[in-house]
Length: 399
Ligand SMILES: Cc1cc2nc3c(=O)[nH]c(=O)nc-3n(C[C@H](O)[C@H](O)[C@H](O)COP(=O)(O)OP(=O)(O)OC[C@H]3O[C@@H](n4cnc5c(N)ncnc54)[C@H](O)[C@@H]3O)c2cc1C
Image (cartoon, helix red, strand yellow):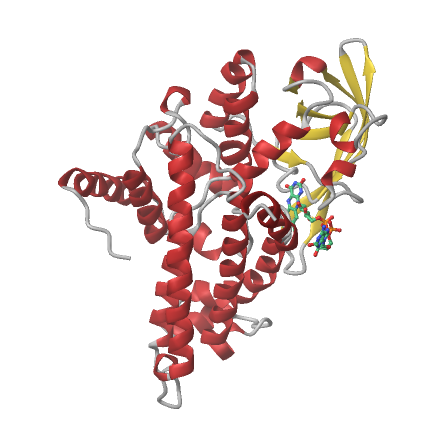
């Protein structure tokens, strides 16, 4: 897709490029390039978060009145494209991408006034307490028990797959506050402090060795009822609203950049004097991928337009989620195919192998396989692809 820019947008692009040139340190770029997982570690994503906060650019998707940038759609497009091309780290989605928009839509004025500035400044780092050992796709069956004690709830039970719970100081959590009626009717949406007595966080390591997710245990944890978002026993609506933002996040700029990198690598001449890009079957795969990424870009624009108009992403977010998960996985497969020998999983000195082949670069050799493995999770995390297709069938196609 060719995008021609107006003089104002061209000036904005220059401003963004100057900013990135000035503020993005080589350490931050390295951290992003070598990140083997889905999420960057706390230290580096917060370092970048703070730089963006100082500039007032940390929450482009939020309405301006709550600290957003007030950018139009083209500025948002320029921003995501330029940051991706420059190799900037990502910011953590749980606060900026999920909790913030959820509070803007459903929080009380007091909750917004207290929590939103702390998300923007990075003072609060959030994790998401939805899934439980026996409740994932069928989330409404969740059991983390919340019993009333005066003005508080007492929580007992467990949450699982909780991304970055080992860094977070806050959790938004779904609890079972009533089990007498329909499962959806007895769920309450709560905000809690991770240092509350009775909470313990146990790591779960991925096959790649990275630590991103955890199991969180609750033993007699006291949470004030003033921390309820929405109404007691009616948190399901709030929970679904937040999921639209979780699933509606974009990714086209990242995919465009990854495809560009793949094309460059495929132009490398190997020891036998051959280039992968000259293989018609492989070249056709790259072209077909380009078309699919354009479709993702189009869907992303539609969702950005819905949010800019004051709405939420809607059930179309499930289309975005599924296409994005599939594309991330496919690009990681193409990367392994492109690197061939240089992507072998057990290279004792993968960095030096990459350095000997300039077209590859050390980071591609080191991260290709861990990313390939980690990205298998993306068609499960945030709601599995099968479940997203059920939602599309029901709410988008009306079947
Ligand atoms: C990397 C990662 C990070 C995560 N981070 C978080 C987090 O921060 N917070 C959080 O709360 N959760 C998190 N999750 C959990 C995630 O939301 C769940 O794993 C997901 O919703 C699936 O639930 P499950 O794992 O219990 O699988 P199950 O629900 O047991 O599903 C097993 C399989 O059955 C299929 N299936 C189930 N029901 C249906 C159906 N009705 N129709 C068709 N197929 C079906 C599924 O598609 C899947 O293939 C994370 C998961 C991963 C992998």
